Length: 614
Image 1 (cartoon, helix red, strand yellow):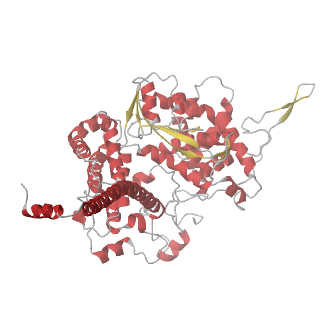
Image 2 (spheres, rainbow, N blue to C red; image 1 turned 180 degrees about the vertical axis):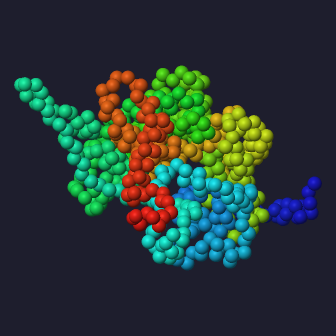
């Protein structure tokens, strides 16, 4: 249907000539061509804009991904810096109350002990007006003093009785014959005998035998080293100072008044290596045998440096620590081993030929479960709640919720995990004094429910939450992966809650590493682990390392060529032979310090020809 406008346009065209019609057609064609060109240009521009838009979207997606990675890296590096600052400046405490207090005050990463403007802990609390965080009953503060505690502590010391009186002074003050001794009041003090170094010259006879006058030398059987000035007491003091007091040999060498004569560090080192290799090694191997016979063992490892071990400079070595369970009632055995690596090869070699099953309390280092898998059920791995707790501490440390209220702090998942683990420790700690059977029974009543509550919290946690820090996720994953081994202490009363006892035994290695830094040779490292084994085992059984080493240095030369091992039980620090030796040694020192003629006096009488004085 044609409109009126179209009809008018047609009639107007009919009046045009052909030339005019051609011109109009050409004009229309040109306009159409221009329109097509513009349309094409517009389409090309649109396509280019679409490509640019897609590129911008890709760049934005990449930028977002890069920002996410950078944010995670920043969070990770910030956490590392915070933990390093905490390790450098923070308090080395694992008490839940102290950890939460540091978190509230922001002390985990920002407290510098060299800052003179930093207020003391008590002053900080008084200024902020915050109440003390007390999650559990503070048994240390609420514990009453036990009657007779001091007497029990001093009962193991030798006694030197000294009667302090002056007859002349009493006669002058109260009149001769006008007084008498009614009774004596005891005033105990602990005295220390300062080390005394002296030259002991032992003469051994050279005899003439028979009519031929054959000369015979009587051997000096107690000599530790032929033609050497070393004695058991001197070498025991050197070894104790280095491995118990962590006094390096170069300090012992340069102490001007220590011995009063020249003694080089190389000579002392040679003495130590000789004693460990020739005299102490059988005792060390016997302790290793006793340890492997125990059905409950604990293990850990730490780094160590040996300068000349055939490898590149700076290559790390390791010292492994094995011990019997801290909950066993039998004597404790602590064994140190030197290894070049941290792999499971040490465990394979140490337990080679092991056929009796045993429980091994340790951390989550991969060498332990792989070794347990190889042993086909002989080894049962038990977890360590101390390592689980430390991961929550690290997560809380990088959070640093300074200024947060106590109620809000206790709602944080990091604090919730610490609180639940703290409840487990608080319930299990009083059970250590019980027997294994009673401890296991009490654990089912007092501890199991708290363990269930902790793992309910761990297993219900959402690890996909983007607001959760990586440290907290790591803490959750650790407990989830180790749940079976962490629960194992509930099955047996001889299994401790954590591997803390081994870590306390590793501390002497760390302290020695900080003081004498390294061992020069592998022989020195092996001597270090042997001496540390004897000293720490002696300390764990309540004996003094100096007297124990002196006892061994006096006794072992007599058994140097014995093929049997019948004498080794008497060389243990818990043997009756050594206990008697230590008591006699201490008593002889105490008796030596008593004044001459020190006996309990009687009241003088007038007919006594000589006035008694003391």
